[in-house]
Image (cartoon, rainbow, N blue to C red; front, side, top):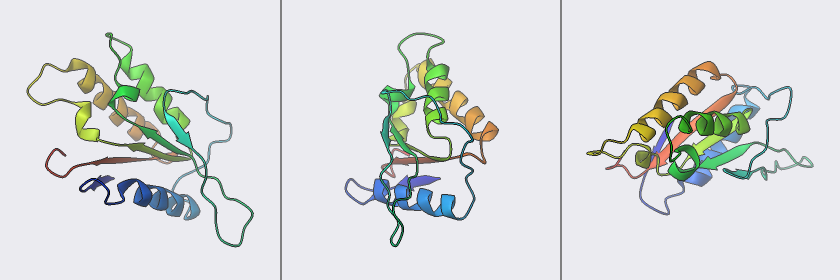
Length: 138
């Protein structure tokens, strides 16, 4: 999914709601075991349902800094780790347009996009990926 809009228009809030709805509808499968935790990506698990004690969804927020490495061959593992953390929930990539910088030889950003596409395809029933950013840049 792709959410576009100006700053402050609620892209992150809507991403959380959409993720919660997709999980409730059964469109996203919860993994049978917990994914490995890491402090690289911001993980937020605080979504409560009305009338129930607490329903927890996985919402991992990432940016270029969380997904793109400085050295050749380190980017794909960072992307794979972020997707693994988001299994059973949402991987929200804020300012997704920054993954690949136009007009530059950004092989690391391209590696991130390639790895993300493969992970999205391989794990399509277990994770929702939402890309957010400004309309012009996206």
